Length: 127
Image 1: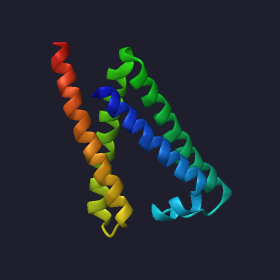
Image 2: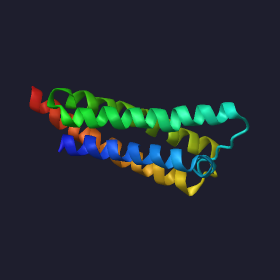
Image 3: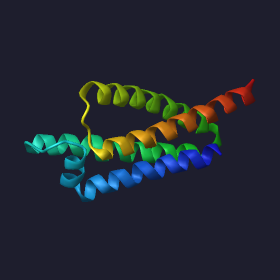
């Protein structure tokens, strides 16, 4: 189950990176960003394409190699915990967010909780 989880996460990050690469203005606008300068375009590309592509690659490799699967799972859990806490707090503080923010947040909750369940099971298995 852990390899499937890692591959699924990798696929989501790869799809999101491709979506941002192909339609940067549309994706940025749907997330509430606007490009004010070329520096903004570079930063958006680095974070929303480069980092997502790096996550996709790392998670695919973790799924492929059994010895590093736990590292990939732990990375996902730590990342999703941070995303869930900050996205939830920010949405509550600022309010009035677009539907896509709720969709992305919901996906993060699902993947985060699923990752925690897998991690707890794996850690019990290692005892």
